Image (tube, rainbow, N blue to C red; front, top):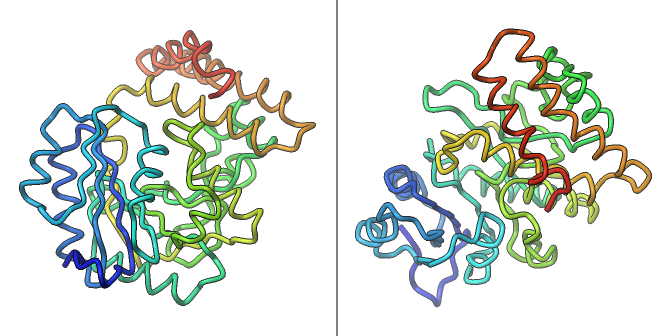
Length: 311
């Protein structure tokens, strides 16, 4: 049950940021309520949804601490706003397009208690059909990884750790593992450490913010860790309907990550090579006679003025 008594702080403050995902958000909150026994509070930031999300959530979940915003703040700033209001020992960032399975939040908090040196923790994510969703964790971007993407190697050899290093393809997610980056859909961190890091860098409107925070955390000695014992469904992409728009945001974020986290001597070259990735995808898909996919990447390439210099 949501811990509403202010005299007894919750162990974990669960933060959900929603945008036009009313039914999925309601399903997510129902699963939290049904599957969570550790004392918690729920803080929901609604980013100016137009689908009645805020009203529906407030009606069904009166104990949720609702922040119904009139502007869409994006993911990073909205989580920062919610974290300022949080009272828990831990912060759990939870996407609205998720379903908590088999006491996953309880399991993740217990895992964090047992592995405190990691300082950031995550679980295993599944698609709606219960198959593996491997996007729960990533390796950091590297110059070799960027070159491999631009040359098409990461697409041709998706299961190769050498040619697709960022995706960690050699790991089946069924074992505990240290990772560079825990994805923000199911992301646990001590509130004190979050505050020490200054939360998300608000430069990142959407995408890349958790990668930036994890890399800054690693520089302070954190070793983020994943457990397969805490599992959720993550449908993914529910609030971002147009693929080209999503990729423009993602490319912009990745260009910023290169600027912020590559060694100084690699930054300009890394960004120059990364700019070629959408072009190579467009050409490769055209050669493979996949016109619909090629046209999406053509649009992304044509919109390069929007993303090529990052945020």
